[in-house]
Length: 117
Figure 1 (cartoon, rainbow, N blue to C red):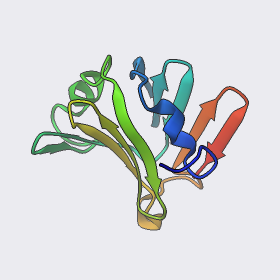
Figure 2: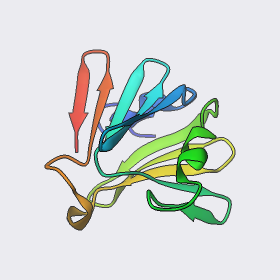
Figure 3: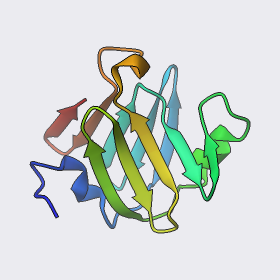
Figure 4: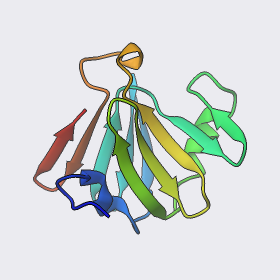
């Protein structure tokens, strides 16, 4: 396993998604004190079903992850941020330049630590 400087999201492993906040044009995911703001809207995969921001049931799929524990959280450079839950569902944020809607795809806050993609 990589250390925290190589994988700042590793601190999320074992934590729960505590809330999902729908802000005007982005989404905040709260993890027991840490926050991941997604300007590139995340995709949710549950079993064999994928929910994009325009999909019927998208908001429900995101909110149903609340209370789920994270088994893995990582960044695949220039590809995606991926959060994997104990039930094997995932939330992922694209890091492909074609998907950026703002200069940043996501911002992670954990105490004094801030990471921008």
